[in-house]
Amino acid sequence: MRNLLPIAALALLGACSEEPPQEAVTSGEVRGKPIASAPATKPKLPPEVVTLTGANGINLAGDAPPVDPPKEKDGYREVKFDLLTSYDYEWSQTTGIVAPGAAGGAQIPPEVRALDRAKVFIVGYMQPIDFDNEGVRTFLLTNYPGGCCFGMVPRLNEWVEVSLAGDERVEYSYFDAIEIHGKLEVGEAKSGEVVTSLYRMTPDKVEIADAR
Image (cartoon, rainbow, N blue to C red; front, top):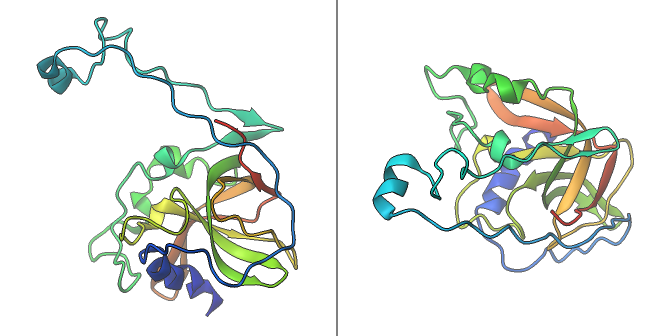
């Protein structure tokens, strides 16, 4: 039954709650700084050129947005939701079962599957699914703050199921982005025929995200 907690939590994520849960948790410790704003864009080409090429400057090749190398912290490589959500996974949001004729776990592209068991850190927002007065035991890490995903039920590759080891707890963070550090598990987890998650982690560390 516990394996189905992430599925039950999806309905709550789609509700776009305006207020934090009434059961506040107070234990654990998180630290960090606010997230930095995005860099300014460069001067643009005429709209027709942008439409045809996707370029955003005079030098089509040289003016492409820079690709920053992944950050590393204490041996953990940064993985962004842009990569984790870069593909479509055919899965029923009502039954949790892979669509008939779909390729199941083979839908996960090689560049994402290569992250399995890798030491990574991921920045996102906490959506608690198993907690008490001592703190949060299990939560979903999503790319959306405050439990709101604009009324949409998140796709299966839009969150990471995070379970604290043993009796550990972490303080609930509602508005602040957090970082989870640990070995990422990639692949379908199932309860019977129901796919419950694609990404999982038992973190070595959870903290407020540094400025990006």
